[in-house]
Amino acid sequence: MRRYGKHADEDDVRVRPNRKGNRPRTNIRPKHEDAAEGMVLTVDRGRLTCLVEDRAVVAMKARELGRKAAVVGDRVAIVGDLSGAKDTLARIVRIEERFSVLRRTADDDDPYERVVVANADQLAIVTALADPEPRPRLIDRCLVAAYDGGLEPLLVLTKSDLAPPDELLALYGALGVPHVVTTREEFVDGVAADRVHEHLRGRTTAFVGHSGVGKTTLVNALVPKERRRTTGVVNAVTGRGRHTTTSALALPLADPAGGWVIDTPGVRSFGLNHVDPSRVIHAFPDLEPGTEDCPRACSHDEPDCALDRWVADGHADPARLHSLRRLLATRERREGD
Image (cartoon, rainbow, N blue to C red; front, side, top):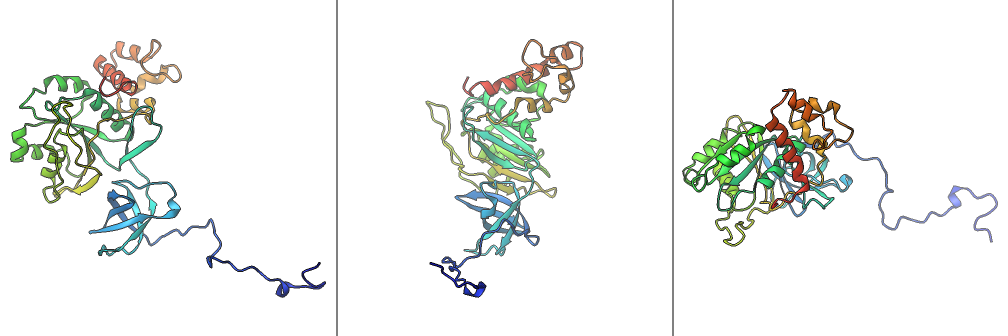
């Protein structure tokens, strides 16, 4: 049976209405050319606090960004209510290109990488010389992550009144990593913060370290207006502290030259499954030219590696090659090994 007559036209055709009442989907997305620029300060359960001009604006990620997540330090484009008033919510519509990324995996077998901080210039690795004992393998892993992500490392050694720093500093001397050594008394009277402050001016610095080393205490001294809860207890059996910082937070440094301090949660492991070992060599400009004659996919720790000849010919210090190979080997070892 024919539904329409022999000479039916468009007026005779009945169109089923759109029950949802919405417009058809399209692949054309708005460009949001009028979006404001902002910086992500912290992330809490899908809500991102961003700095827009001089205001803290709470925003959520736009659906068109898909699974791409914004992290602390990201420069973003924001639309919507930018007043920063209570109970208002803006929308992040674009995440700008990052110039550095600090990433980690839960362990070396985990394929899922987690971006901890974006757009930081420097990574301050805070380690106690005693109570809890220093963990050189964890320091090595943080150094690899810094070199891989485009951050310059800074070593901050605390509690030097309990143990001397000489052995640990000798271990990293060939890397030329700048360092600051402090005592517990200097933490109290503010001298430690002043020393570290000298390395932070005009830069964005992410602080990492396992619990109990004084990381958050140091951050509180550097940015006293924004105090975070600290840990004062180190487990007598494990030698580790309890995590009190549960989310990363960017805080402005009180300095005419500017700068930001990013406090991150305490870590007990720092997986490097995401790191391509071939990128670590970029942090060794004195060794990198020697890799031109290396075999394809050279691990730089095998009999045919050209770096041995490069060092033997006097182009670089043997201690530098030893440090490179030690860092590359951390990807194959656990922190506690």
